[in-house]
Length: 287
Image 1 (cartoon, rainbow, N blue to C red):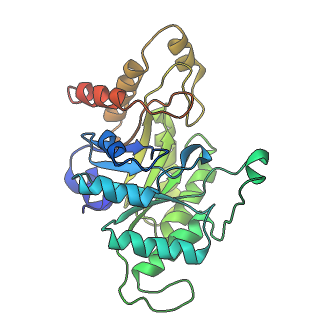
Image 2 (image 1 turned 90 degrees about the vertical axis):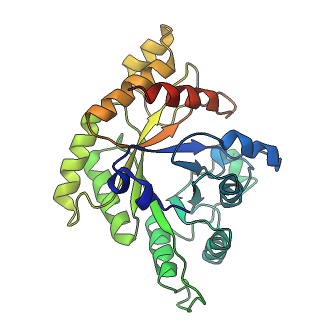
């Protein structure tokens, strides 16, 4: 299996693309076929929509058996320390090496009558904990029979105040994150400000890959982050989301953003449009 740090642009000198993939609300093995997308890595999301879905690590292992490199996502919201570290050992047995740590969306009032958050870890703490497992130590200070070998990633949102996100990114990297993924980027100028600020705050600027989020928009679809009103207007007037995504990709290439986190359109109800991803990839290869 290829680690993110070995498959990124910095290691290969080729554009590297991770595609977001939503686990199904079933245990149907046939759902794995949707993941046959020609990208460098398939990233399996963690219970999107706070709904019951296939476990991200188990699905990532099933996709890996089909010949795709994978990443699985792990949220701190739902498991205590014992459960999390046991899951990580299970992921290692399944041959997985890439994991992205997130907090997980908070449960709303209606959710809390049915399910309780755990949050034994904050994301930065879990990243540090996995780093300790890579050194052969569990959360109790006990010695693992075999150290794990995970490449850990973390998430930042350039739509938030840049200074705050940079400080958070620095903490995550110092805790052991080896790569970062951003929420969708619609203005590459935000990236320039992030890079400048990161270089100021970090003692190791530019030493880790960052995958910049690129979402294929859809009119009336679900959005990962705030979208500029100008793009919303273009969608309302009938401009295809695929066309907008290709223009954004050109901007990425011009700004040398060579690691891309590609997000398919999300329809109301949560269904992903993976055909749009395949159409995007076919046309992006000509750019």
